[in-house]
Image (cartoon, rainbow, N blue to C red; front, side, top):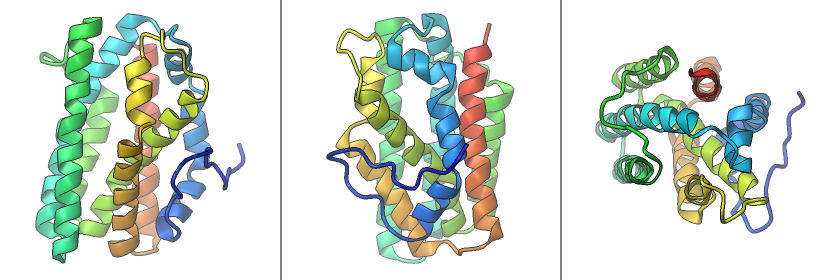
Length: 223
């Protein structure tokens, strides 16, 4: 699957130039695999079985706790005030995203309070927290950016054919929103500001992208 260097949709804000853009383009193969995954296509059509979506919501709620903690640790490691503020805002964004999942609990019957994390979920959260504890601000940005950028890109793509009667329309609206695009751009800015253009950064970014695909795949295959 070839790289798609120009993925912007009409009306979107531009993705920042620099290392963050290079990393995204280098991993477009995984992004396209996520977009074409039957789980994501099921969200797009509204035909995804509700039990699979609800299982995913619970797993994602567990994941978001680690995601928010990674940003909190990055606040401490940020080398300047601007970085501290940005990571703090991203932690707040992750915590706010969790409220969407509470809404799915009320609307679709998802269970977010008694979740046993799957292998794929643990694979992702353990990686995020290990990176946040052991690495610097630039590498924490590299580990967390794929989630925000991928979900913004998926939401914007799914929004093109969205139906207001789709039971998963709130998911699509959230991740296609300008506010979520801003979160994606903020993490990309932090990569450009702090990360080194080296093999470690590339490895961490790609591993996070692989975790994203595995997360969708686990939800699809869940019995």
